[in-house]
Length: 353
Image (cartoon, rainbow, N blue to C red):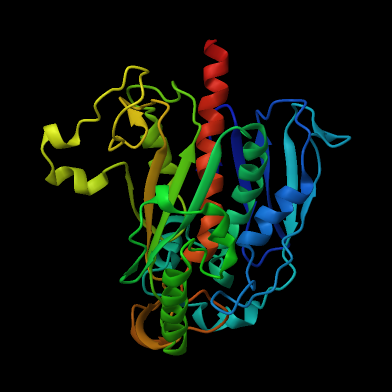
């Protein structure tokens, strides 16, 4: 299986399956001499881990990170950083009923057709559990990008939208509620909606908005390696993501050029920021903001038709512990992937200068 690495200079390679002994990763290209805050790394893991509230999966995993290499006396050495996260709460029997069944909208069918074999326990390598390793790498990237602020939050659940622009929000309130929406009234509506959906044995989708502030001018390359293209690839590599837009996004397609153009101030900043902080594929120093769409989780606790390995349409019902809405736990994953992209371009720029 190819495609298990992300990044060019700051590169993460992940390994492991949902119900294996452990998951983990190797980080190549991390600069030496970074004094790591291990509590901050674990806090990022705690934001992503299952079982943290009654609106997410109740699988209980401590998600404690064990570092194996690349760190000495609390500092990075510049050598590969190896780490593992033990799986401690697998219930593989919850998946025995789908051993020979392809669940609707899952990776089961395509995996087996491509590789001739699949780990049906929790989806194996296709499980969102793999994203825990990304959060570790993103937490380390955040620490040497400390001047850059990366804040993601839940901006919609189903048809409930946070209508306020990000400039009016207090990001410190994002962690004040289970759905991770920095607007209390909207958060309550979202939580109620998710609970209703969970009670039905169903799932629901939503969106995550991410804002990057204090990004230096000049990150990104103007042709194939555009900054927004790499951010898009990063976000679309996250499980359940169905869409990505930055700046004005699809709304910009309805505008005239005179409405959409960001006019300059004398200091090089712009009066508006419909470009989303990126012009010509390169950061311009303004805030970078983008939105990521997540589909409803494919496993529903309702009876549905499914295909089995014999080519028969059968009736199946989801079992086990699953998120009724993946969005709240996706917040630290979106931030981590954004940090990996920025770290890669930041180190590339240092090579130029």
